[in-house]
Length: 445
Image (cartoon, rainbow, N blue to C red):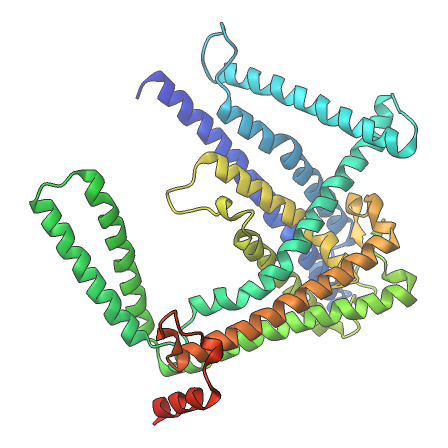
């Protein structure tokens, strides 16, 4: 390896370290609210235990402040530094090396910071008709506005991704589990994959004997490996036990449906609370008094359900984010993801995870109030924004769920009765009901 390769390897390694730290902060942000809820229930269950004295409100409050600090540090400084660091080459006329890239990255990041602060200064001046000039005002006025804008963007991104992800969870889970025999014929699919694999293998062997170029053989080889992996997966699915085939899939679908319905019902109930109860509004909490009362009317069971729902919403938001046409290009692939895509994935996951506590409290999934700087966002006290947010989430989730269930049932019925093999010139919507029933009865017999 020459000097340039060693330098690039060092830069990539530093950028990967920063990405690893950012992902760690994102995981901490996801676990922040569940850990706080479970800590409160543990203190309620063991109020005078000597071994639980270390678990108190100041510890949880400190964790919230640390996660807020490191999430904003990663989002505002570390990830832009990692991107500009990988793209930098050093100033013209300077000696090449890692430090030259560091200097260029620092200058570019400083200019970007001045640009962002200038835009925030102009925005605050337009909104309040006043201009602040001291550094104290920058810390107390401009940065909270910037944090509020970032959090509002993250919460809006969750509003768009989560309903779509809740509907996509059914198809994603169905692709990972073995379906019952009525919905999936694994034997036929495996035979087709075996024949296709044998055909591609003969083409590859004939291509190697005829001395074809690598450009012609490479697409065939990639297709052969894909079909081979599909055939191996189908073999594993065929070996599944009857319990795994006929019990796990219906239970998983019913569990997903129950979790989604509970989320929608809790949001609808929170909408009614917003109309009649002022304490339902999300707000900050200065001194958390853990161990005094449960944050759920159903006690420890309700708190456990809240934790499960929060984790389920996070997984659904990630699924919806990567399933969205706008962000499909960010989806990482094994051994085929460049460093810019890795940085983009880290930023996206950090934005989603850092907005999860505000998102869960705004929807009323939990009554645990926001701690530290998470409760200082300016838009949290606006009733119209919170009320409209809840209405939009309930409406979008219900619409996506109804659309997914109706289309899924129709697709599985068509596939079970063998009507998906009809030619494209025949419209399936014009098939008489008698023909559909006759085809189904013939398959049962």
